[in-house]
Figure (tube, rainbow over the protein chains, first blue to last red):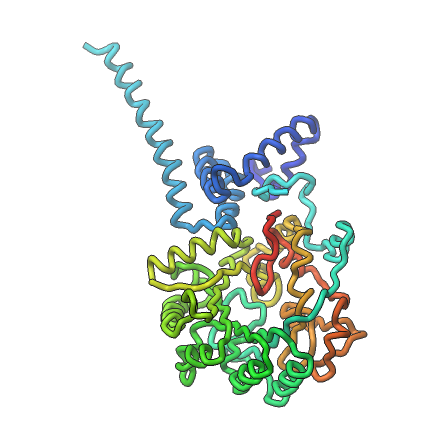
Amino acid sequence: MAYYEEDDLQRFSEIAKHRPDLFEKFMSWYQACQEEGALSRREKALIGLAVAHALQCPYCIDAFSQSCLEAGSNMEQMTEAIHMASAIRGGAALIHGLQAHHSVERVSM
Amino acid sequence: MSTGLPVLQPGLNGRPRSDVDFDETLRAHGMELQAATVDTLQVNIGKLCNQACKHCHVDASPSRTEIMTRETAAAVIDAVRRWHIPIVDITGGAPELNASFRHLVQEARAAGARVIVRHNLTVMLETGQEDLPEFFRDHAVEIASSLPYFLEERTDAQRGHGVFQKSLIALRRLNSVGYGKTGSGLTLDLVYNPVGAFLPPAQASIEADFKRELMNRYGIVFNHLYTITNMPIKRFLDYLHRSGNEERYMRKLVEAFNPATVDGLMCRNLVSVDWTGRLYDCDFNQMLELGVDPELPQTISDFDPKKFVRRRIMTRSHCFGCTAGAGSSCGGAVSVTSF
């Protein structure tokens, strides 16, 4: 068994099997988040794409890449969103370098 | 219902959806597809084209030889005159390459019809076609031109190497005679097709992008942008099959079925004529050789719009392409509500 199956994208609703009430609540919340609001559908899709990359979720990356295209984004815009996610991930790792500095300083003369 | 994400459609359970029957889907929503009226005669005057776009539902190319004769064009003109058809929508191929094209435009205009030409822009650069902007202007032709994106890479990926730059030249020429300019009365509409196996974005949203980018980057103006969904037939279906996207794309179309689009479908207001004079409910059915209801007149010579009002529309699975999301027609999206 492979860890990730592409067809699982279409089987997401099977998660509802054991607690349909919880899945229903999740779906309602999730879909409400996608609605056009103070942010446009395109902006939300780009946020989704960035988060999907930060989480490195192949299902989400696939789904939000399609969503971005269907919201009218182009590859230049999508790539900028991916760089935003990557840069913040990189920065988040790098800032922890100060933790290492503190740790080293604590035991250093 | 707006879902936004294909991954989160409950109830799919992985079942392939391309076998879903279109009429069955309509019935499940308490609907049936009947024509309302006939205000448009869409005339496909041949499959000859100077381009061979990857999404073309006509399979048009420079090597195609199917082209409407002058006699058939005369039968079309007779019908326009006799029945006072309000709109004549001329398409192809590149319709300008048909020797009868200009005659058809002139006669349809003389009969009082609005004339729309599905103009691919680059044909204007072909030998003998240089005066097309002036011809269009002099006959107040409404132009609808495909431009899948405002960037070169995506446009050329669909329509062929060099097409984007040639299209810019043609658009500038059209602008120079007044097309797309406020107050000129000369209509230049653009048509967006997705460059791949995905649905078009919201029409108003992408129109705003096109207006801003075409003006800022190239100084080009136009009137409206229409979004059209790629139909899973002919050359685009071949692409779907080759790229492994066929099942996924069909599932996407079926899942995005929007009952709010049905009233505005183009087949409810037009009749399509092929290069031989045969009649169809739309240009897509024409390419599948799916003629109008067999109980109706089958050719333009026998056409009588009274018999085509409230006719039963012939459907197949490709019809999901016109009802997906905000819908799709020759005039773009058909519903303000999305799926």
